[in-house]
Length: 76
Image 1 (cartoon, rainbow, N blue to C red):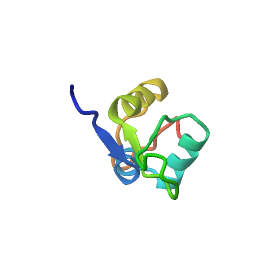
Image 2: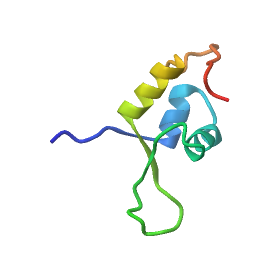
Image 3: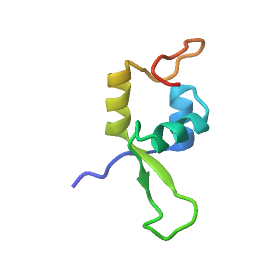
C-alpha cells in the first residue's frame, strides 16, 4: 500500500502564498479537508492535508501553487 503524501500547514501556506490562518479558516468551514494526526489524544490538533485533497481544491478553485507577484482567486 502506498503511503499518502501529507502536507503541513506551513508547507501549504507557502505553496499557495497565503497565511496559515487562511488555511485554518478554510478547514474550519469545511471547504478544505484535513487530517488530525494526534489520534484523539486531545490538545492542539496536528493538522495535515492530503496531497490529493489539495490538488482537488486547486482544480475546483482554478488555483495554482504560488507564483511570485501573482494573486490567486478562490481563497478569501
